[in-house]
Length: 405
Image (spheres, rainbow, N blue to C red):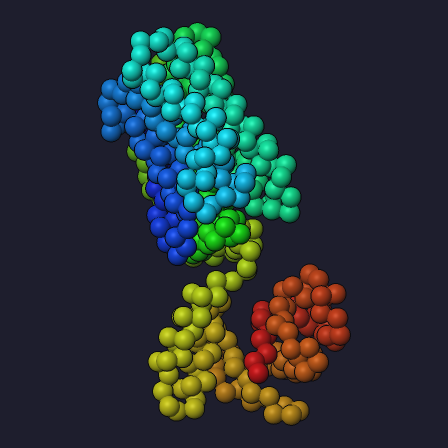
């Protein structure tokens, strides 16, 4: 039961990555090798799942493990020589012939000869070592591209080490320990995000995957919900294992609490916005989803009327929606003063806010930068030359001042 959850999560991760690879426009060999590797990993995770295959055999385990190992040997052999021009050239390399022949031999021996299984386990142990050796060679010769290869090293390194331990133990005791098999799904599930990051960094091979922040946000929320439900299930399992039992009242309270927390997590715009900012800052190279926001802004501007005031208001509304704000002012500067040409649910500037706007205009005439007043309070040195009192800014309700030319 517990092992099925791990393999299901791993299979879901491989399926998502497989679908993302299908969106890559490049049709080169590197894409095909990656598709083959990810597809074999997906099949491997599915056949370990007893919800789908109630009584899998050891032969099935070993066959799909061999297929998975062969796919990564093929990819790493091509990467070592940066040879993605033709498949026959990759297959004719000595590295591919020597390393790739072992998992193929394991399958043939398994199904065609009566050789004891511990010899098959030994072959898989050697293959895991070969994968680690190929990774070490690839890391040494990667040079300036080491940053792009590191996530791949982490993924294949971790799973290969676990495979080595699993099959080394099986070689000694002559059987596969079910505890290792149960844990393997969770190991792969935990390491799958590194494989996704690795594929995103393979731009030098023409692999460019666009992952929307909205997809990452919803995936993160679902992951958090899954972790929460998993923790609740583990608590129940531990209580049952220790000989205890759930009281009906406690069950109802915990279920109600779970539902409330999950609803709050999915419906709270504050939590979602903070999480989205955190994801954008830490997991994306660019800090703004320009493609999506540009489309939204273009659609908003297209709905405007011919009246000049409506055009101003439509433009202000489009900009505000792009940064998830519901209030704002659009001001037109005329030499020494400004006129408010559009107002989106914002109060008229009083003396304090008028002074802030005037000082911001003076600064923007010298440096046409976006002004984040919250950042100015924390790091005023980032706005050298802006003569604005911190006490004045602290009382101001504005956050962003954006010059438009």
